[in-house]
Length: 406
Ligand SMILES: *[C@@H]1O[C@H](CO)[C@@H](O)[C@H](O)[C@H]1NC(C)=O
Ligand SMILES: *[C@@H]1O[C@H](CO)[C@@H](O)[C@H](O)[C@H]1NC(C)=O
Ligand SMILES: *[C@@H]1O[C@H](CO)[C@@H](O)[C@H](O)[C@H]1NC(C)=O
Ligand SMILES: *[C@@H]1O[C@H](CO)[C@@H](O)[C@H](O)[C@H]1NC(C)=O
Image (cartoon, rainbow, N blue to C red; front, side):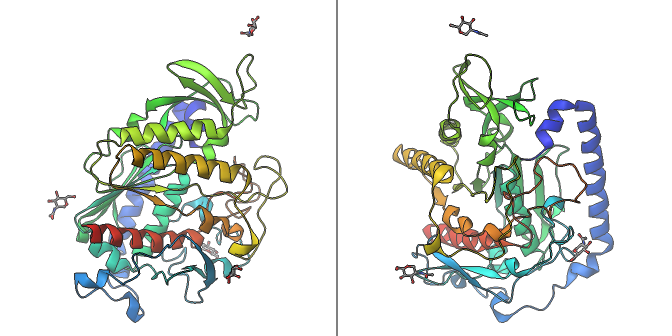
């Protein structure tokens, strides 16, 4: 749903300009941080639970074996832990308060697993665990959404330095912890291209080479300690599927003689290929499961919107329809890769957790009303601050588990 690849396809010259503007903006940002560094030098007062851990043993809390992915959202009046004034890393389209979202209760919930308490994200503990290490997000803008949430949550301790290349990839360095966080943009995970045609919904028509690595990330991940891989919503776009260099079908392309196939056809194969690319990857791979969208009253391009203002109870909804199909396909490929002996791979199984948060999306508060954007009512990404901040609680828990596995 990100407009960038379409821009990429439509106007290379403009893209180059955008990159330059982005680079200039990044330089100005870094400069601003240097000038304002005193503002960040001493983090604001913290509650006792946020104190730096005294020793490594504090990393363990006795709840490591709990199923953290089944639970409900409970009120957390303490949240949020940052605002759009204290954190500059919020992507503009997820800065819901800037665009006039009237309510803020959606920021004040935390995830409560049924069987235990999941500790809130402690930025000191997180940085303690990842000291000297590197983490990369690979996938689409929902992964980037989570990365920016983490930058904001860590901002109580430290802001990273932007060492990004002039592309859609990002590299952030936490100097005091020698921790690197990167983001590789690959919404389909496999090699893809853009066709000349804009496709039946006028949002671009893509070629997916389902068995071919997207080398823009597979060639760069060597040496990373952790990888968080995700994909999903781009598979609903108009795409033509290739295998063995031949067209095998498409997803709503309306081209003559090409069979229409479901999005899960490509989604499943894309993960299979991505996992094959990770066969020799030494680090830990966290596979972030499909994050459901919450369009109601229509599809994303046909007036659907997300206007709820509260989370839904786990007993009041079920995973169904395409969300269930995508989730199932992804988990089956995950298990198949594990079955083939892939080590160091875990499911970050957030689908059900995020299904319960129809209230956390930007909806129409991701842009000015008159602005022309691809995703007019955004019910895919998450407002920051917002529910995806709880993904950091999950991530920290999973990193603790890895630390314990040693
Ligand atoms: C932050 O949100 C407020 C509304 O709460 C808005 O007025 C302001 O422009 C936003 N600031 C930034 C830097 O996005
Ligand atoms: C920083 O971490 C990298 C590994 O990510 C390591 O190779 C390097 O030696 C570390 N540098 C310092 C100053 O500790
Ligand atoms: C579609 O397939 C039919 C039957 O094989 C063939 O006659 C026709 O030329 C094809 N059309 C295109 C546009 O390839
Ligand atoms: C959901 O249903 C189960 C079984 O009926 C019950 O034990 C649990 O308390 C319910 N959870 C909520 C949040 O209502």
